[in-house]
Image (cartoon, rainbow, N blue to C red; front, side):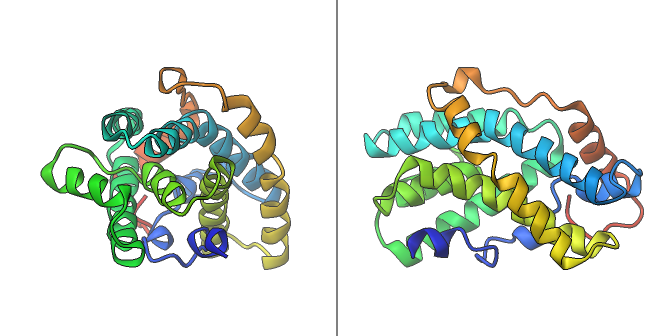
Length: 222
């Protein structure tokens, strides 16, 4: 039930405000139909696994060791790999909201120490780190934390697609089902990686996210 609660798409951290670059991809014609939408989301998930996903595991393991220094290192590793302003805004805004919610709901925990570091300006407060710390505090597994991280991104983008495209809601769910089937393979790929192995190379994703900054019509914050 904790996995369901903290993996829910209506978790009040503001995910509905973001599209993870999908809005510009639709405007630029990169995403036009169900096939290109699935490809775009699949690319985003692979990029997330090999970058933010590695940080999720690093922060989760650091939380189990009660090592705030390693948690902050993973936090900065995420922030430093966000190449454009809107992506940084998304991750730190959602991260801080998750930390504040965790302190209110869970009480004193490693999330509290992280939130204090954010408030002091000693940590950026990236969302994937918050997910790792919440799941560690709940005594859940790192596989659960990684799965929720990947599912949350896919769910955010699928929900955005229904507002951006002519897409049947059943087709949207079919896409979500298929892209989520890659989560186990992604976990196995990065389970032994360190934050030094983080890689987010996906040029088209970065270009469309950058184009969104100057868009004259915008539904989402990125």
